Length: 120
Length: 109
Image (cartoon, rainbow over the protein chains, first blue to last red):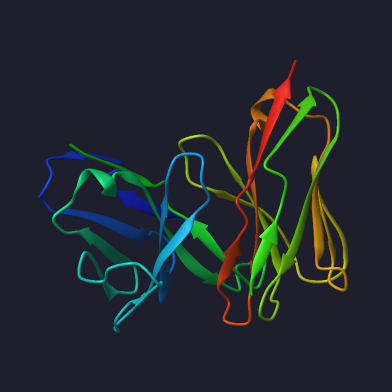
């Protein structure tokens, strides 16, 4: 249980284009998902918290108009990087908040496999 | 403020034991997590502690002392595949994970 998928796994795009990344919870419902960004050899940086049916909560310094988040269903959250630029090239990882998983902790996060974005 | 400290890098020998320490300071506390992250991949959940003491899971064990704001991850019988970054994270009062920068573990034959 608690499998999270992400699509696509790799994206190469031209500067100025928009890129949409999907995050799905495959065998459970996730009311809360998180979007992280990770630059090489650095730790995970939380970008935003995505709540189903409501607006995302963005971390300080993250432009909400540039990184559009939509959590329209209990199994899908999307991150759209609008007008991508080379400095947006990074590893984008989503995670889903899981509560009460049998045999596991009361509350934790399970991660998708990540999406590597390269903007040329 | 909220802060998670762990060593940047450690080196150990195949077959040996290594202990990765983590100290944390967060607004509220709902558990201490360890994740493993191989290069180029997303983190995978390893362990969770919310009560003081040692939790053992195969070759990996995790320890927590809430009064000291301290945890460690113990890896026994090290294998080459254990070469990875190990991320310590504390869950705060809002159930949000506060992440350390990770400890890169290098295993030598």
